[in-house]
Amino acid sequence: MQTIERDPILARTLDATRNPGLTLIIGNKNVSSWSMRPWVAAVAFGIPFTEVKVLLDQPDTANQIARYSHAGRVPVLMSGDMTVWDSLAIIEYLAEQFPDKHMWPQDVAARALARSIVAEMHSGFGELRTHMSMNIQARLPGRGRTPGAQADIGRICEIWEDCLSRFGHHQYLFGEFSIADAFYAPVVCRFKTYGVALAPALQAYCDRVLAHPAVARWVKDAMAETDPTPLHDADLPGE
Image (cartoon, rainbow, N blue to C red):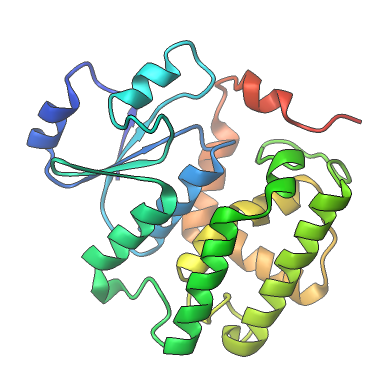
């Protein structure tokens, strides 16, 4: 995987012409949970892509992202002259383009459940997102535990317990690493940041996710970042 800091000066049309493969535009790895999901999935399943990082919370961030998508957010996937934005849309596109990778579980019932919990992650858990925002470098045990955030933690634990007991076989949520695990990987990172105490089986699952090569690589890159993200840092819960 080739990495480019920010965007080259050349227009994205020229980029697409020179590189007809996949280009994934992401934000800072320390705080961009939505970027983490498709990146981890692509790396985990050996899908080659060029990485372009747009630094968040900078004066030119909006202009940089606008060169790729008018939606104004990362991640964005460029495939030749086509643009796909939103992490779930990107994941579905990759799964369609690489059916041999089996990014979703192959069992029909497992796949239906995996799609359901991914959709719930995509659209829900607003209290957790608001009060326990992702910051991989930080260690904030016990903070952000509003009643709503605690309820979200409880629901996530319920999901994990159900998937692991029915399909996980003490490995990942559906046995083999899947899109579902990639989607919940940022939550695993949040639980570590905020010191969330888990039942032994769920903590073991989190440990397996953090040890997965794709997740470990993202976390290593995140820990090495030094670029400030003042807007994201302002969302971190205080004492």
